[in-house]
Image (cartoon, rainbow, N blue to C red; front, side, top):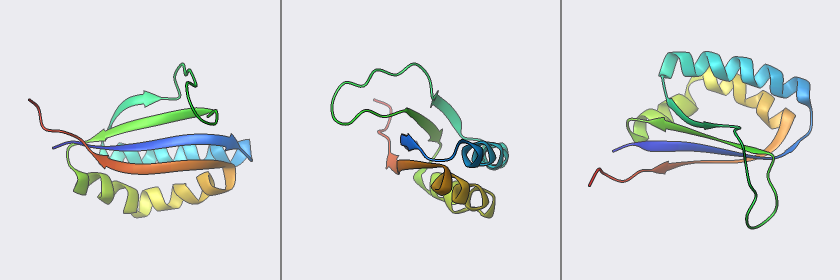
Amino acid sequence: MPAYFVAIREATIDPEQLKIYSEKADQSTAIHHPKPLALYGHLRNTDGDPVEGAVILEFPTFALAEAWYDSPEYQAAVVHRFRGAKYRTFIIQGVEDQ
C-alpha cells in the first residue's frame, strides 16, 4: 500500500537555506527513489491560510517513507528546511487499489 510525504510551505524565511535544503534533499531522494507527484507546481489556494507551495512524494510503503525521512541523508537536509521556511509536513498512508 503506498504512502505519501506531503510538505506544505507556508512562508519563506531564508532563500539561501532553502537552496541548500533542495540540493541535499535531492541527494536523499536519489537514494530512496520516491515518485514525485507534485513539486511546487501551479497552486490555487482555496480555503484556510494561503500557502506558498507544496510537494507530494509517493513511496511504495509507509515504512519506506519513514525510512527516507529518518535517513541520515534526509536528516542532513531537513535542518536547512527548518532554517529556510515555515512548513507543515506529514506522511499519510494511501489506499489499496480498488
